[in-house]
Amino acid sequence: MADLRVVEISDQYTPIAGRVLAELGAEVIVVEPPTGSPHRRRPPFVDDEPGIGRSLRWWGGNSGKRSVTIDLDSTPGGDTLRRLIASADIVFAGGDLLAGGTLTYPDIAARHPQLIWVSITPFGIGSARADDPVTDLTVLAGGGPMWNCGYDDHSIPPMRGSGDQSANIGGMYGAIGALIALSHRDHTGVGQFVDVNVTAACNVTCEQTTYHWLVNQAVCVRQTGRHAFPTPSSPVQVRCADGSYATTGVLPRKPAEYARLVDWLNELGLTEELPETYFLELAASRDRPVDLAAIGEDDETTAILSAAREAVNLIASRLPAKEFFIQSQRRGFAAGAVLLPHEAFDDEHTVARGMHVPVEHPELARTVVYPGAPYVFSASPVPPITRAPLLGEHNSILDDIVR
Image 1 (cartoon, one colour):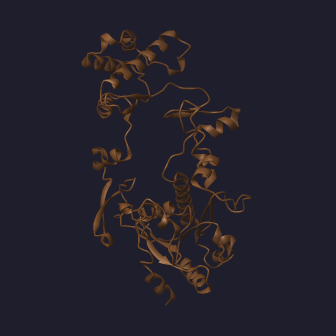
Image 2 (cartoon, one colour):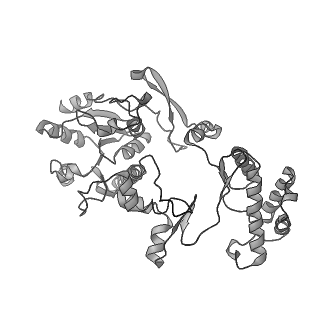
Image 3 (tube, rainbow, N blue to C red):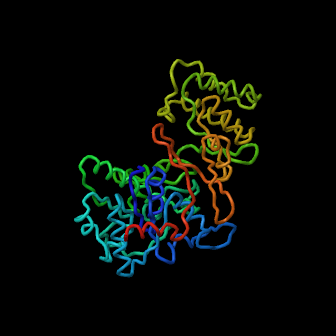
């Protein structure tokens, strides 16, 4: 996307959309007021010292971009923005610019029919709720993700994931919408207006919860570390020998898998502690996989799968979580260690994948390790990550446009 220019008019839900396209090689220019985007004032800050260029949220959402400052409340500022947008292929914006009438997509598109304009707002353009105040909490609650996130114990309130998930989801759908519109333009030569409703985007992430209700009026219930579903499923988290947790994933099904599970129990000297090993050996001697759908209907199948769960839990309880994960993977069993964020980031697999990227911050006289791009393309190398821009660092772009 190196030949594309994206203008992002910094708003509540725009940062991730702009960053994704910057990671794909586009030139992304983020437009801020002269006092700076509100995102710059959001904690946490580097070394816990507030500052216009020290917000880690700003860094995370705006690395790889350029910053220009424009006073959108002034007539000259409006004219400058028009000229900047006229040079762009894609615009990301919230709803205020359209609603205020200062700049409208139909007006711009009449002169620049190839322009793609992506609006990312809490409820979509024209919604009766367009003026309602929102936070990450209210959008995730209204959109549905909080309904299916939490624990088996429903006396505990539902949970929301941290890290501005609604903004991440809305921004990602903004990027997806822009890419689809770009493909359309490649075929037709015509741009279009993309209206991203963040609440609806969050609802799409709810997996089965919404459509179970729409199709059969069934209510999915929260389940610890598992998919919300109308009926409870078997727990998959187990506390390991080091006090950390692992998730045991899907149980074995094939005879060879049961043979490997029995071998693992033998290696650890645990068969005497698990009389149910008999059922695992029975499954290993079969000539067909265990049918998960027969749980509760066929006694032998139920006993085999119950024994498998007991065996996996017993093994996990005797090993550190990371060791359990590694040994499970080597034996072909789906499992994972539950890691803290910094543990996951510093894991040797993450490092080997290239997710540790040193980025220079001359203004702070230090180098900071950033997470790398979440994708690898065989034919389109991801451009090097650069730090988030300082306020108005690239205002020379505007000077060139005005001239």
